[in-house]
Length: 452
Ligand SMILES: NC(=O)c1ccc[n+]([C@@H]2O[C@H](COP(=O)([O-])OP(=O)(O)OC[C@H]3O[C@@H](n4cnc5c(N)ncnc54)[C@H](O)[C@@H]3O)[C@@H](O)[C@H]2O)c1
Image: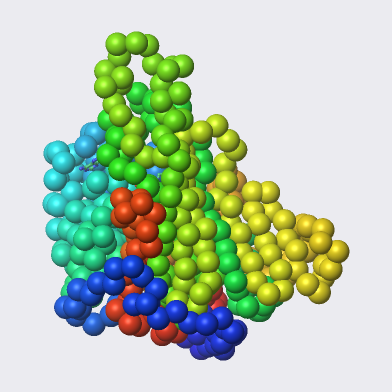
């Protein structure tokens, strides 16, 4: 058995939904053609096997310096090069690499475009991009054009043109371009994925995902983000600025790009109030921050319909006080799970309309949760380490990646699509088929089989 093939691809479990399939063209107000492919699909294309995975890291802020030690902890990974605008951060990263017993990495710190010299090196297999959103597209493009696979932080890119550009560039370069969506590798998300594929939820009907994270203090902090890049996005754009943490797991449960696809989206949002209110309380009058105008509504809600007629509710709110939530809801003809806090109701185990705990379903845990040892990373649920470990495994064994460039573009697309729908008064907008018609193909995905 090919270790990269998903159980679903092998056994085809539950693919035949009774829900009426939507004709994508009929499902939208404004159908449009997609750009013609310049090269064959990258779905299911295996990595070339290698013993060692050589990683170059661009962006050594909070996220890059959080993930670098995870790469260094995985056996058979080397880090020959790092890049950041800040030489001190590059020096700190170099020290981490040296402490892992590796030669000191080359450092690229000579300005905004020095990452191109890192991408041009001939001793890298993978470039990892952990920079502000505006840099994801040029950095991923440079890596692909220099023949490197590339893993990109969330979201993959912020415009539809840039998403298509990366799909095309990946296909032409024959290199993978992957959204490194850590949330998909959480033990709970992987357990739910297994449960869905075992038919425990029956036929799927709807789901919901979100990024609800009170970021106000971080957004206004003078030091948390490099040049306060993240708040700047709130002055530029409306809509869902950060869709992939919420959508990635739900899309995986629904086999999006592996039997179903996202067909159309409608989006609405509230007025923008939270950042203004925070500024009134925390920023003295006359401060330059008072010239900023915040555009995006506090709560953005989109509804996505899939080709099979299922619904996904997708929410984004980083501007109001609240506990963190990604909602992570999935529901079908046999029951429902909702996260934050976790609760489940599944027939025939439950028939009394009372929520249960999810712990009774640990028997469905994914092999990655059971096999990958994450003892040195107790600060999170292990998702980040498992993601990095599995990426390295697929690259070493010559398996296809769990997350394709089509998944990456699909999960990021609600950013520009929500803006388009908002600009048109909440009208439905067609979801592009980044697979260009291959969305029914049984390509390997996150529900991987443990390699022999
Ligand atoms: N997956 C997750 O859970 C998660 C968590 C946090 C952040 N992120 C993502 O990671 C990315 C970085 O976020 P962060 O919180 O680390 O931001 P940050 O501001 O802490 O770090 C950004 C770093 O990028 C560097 N940088 C900026 N422009 C550059 C350029 N042209 N060349 C080289 N380096 C450059 C900055 O100097 C800084 O060190 C974002 O895309 C964010 O959405 C993901």
